[in-house]
Image 1 (cartoon, rainbow, N blue to C red):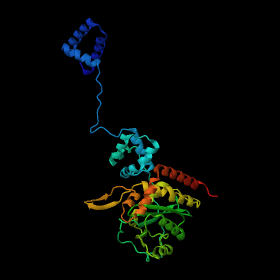
Image 2 (cartoon, one colour):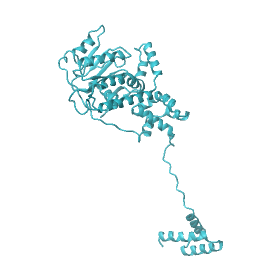
Image 3 (tube, rainbow, N blue to C red):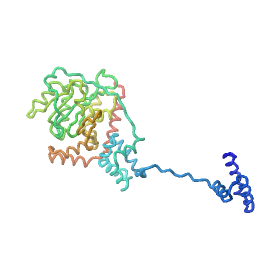
Image 4 (cartoon, rainbow, N blue to C red):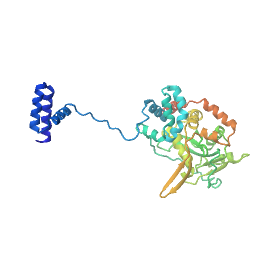
Length: 388
């Protein structure tokens, strides 16, 4: 008798055995033992096992049980990650202490256990929890740099690294809001970053006129919380002109004015990175060819924009890199905001630090982000309207 036949016969006998009275159960067992040549006790166990099907065992995955299953924890991570403009897990870990007080004040959904989990969560765990939630944005890079040939021999190429521990040495570049074509006139963003602290400032200009760029550089210098010591740029004509040369060099304490090598973007690696993270990721590649957008952009850049980027969005600095076999191993410092790097600097006065602390105490990152999104939406809407 095949195993399948035995199973079918056992099914019939078990059902008869379940419904039978005591006397008939004895006869069914005798018949079962005779047909299958089973011991009586073994036959009873087979019938009972068939009538009581086995429960499926719950298989636990190896390793410790997951700790971060509270929905409030995942929701807080997702909302802060989006509001902080999708940073990597290490920078998000550094952002949590800055964003959580405002998040808790608005939602109040986190109990003490959730706050403790968010305080001790690791970057690797953040990556795992946000894996299915992340959205990836890619874009095509564009360059609108036109070389300034007349002054290249008057402005030295930077051949040695500046002191990256002292605030005041800037890298500058322009970001073209040209859409898919460089034809015609459109808006540029003048983007600068400080090498020591990562402090960034942005200003909008119509075209790349020398005087307009100079005026925005003056406005940026006035807004910096530290004195300007050095200025490094690419070979674009918006920077390599006599207006800016006179502005930096004809003063009581001249500013070191240098340029990068032609076609060597790595010479300005700091600002090239900021062009993407501080401008492109926020404004995208839409064409801004309406001059009425310039004051709207500058109103955004000089208010909520600079406060959010410099006070609440941490960044990392490359400490060293070395070649190990065929690989280059890079070591970065702990993610910090430009604001915190300024507080740790010995060259910043206590008065300036006190002013920065007072500003920080008045800020709510979620309100800043909401206002920025509203202004960007308005700018993009006006950019899509046809010009009269």
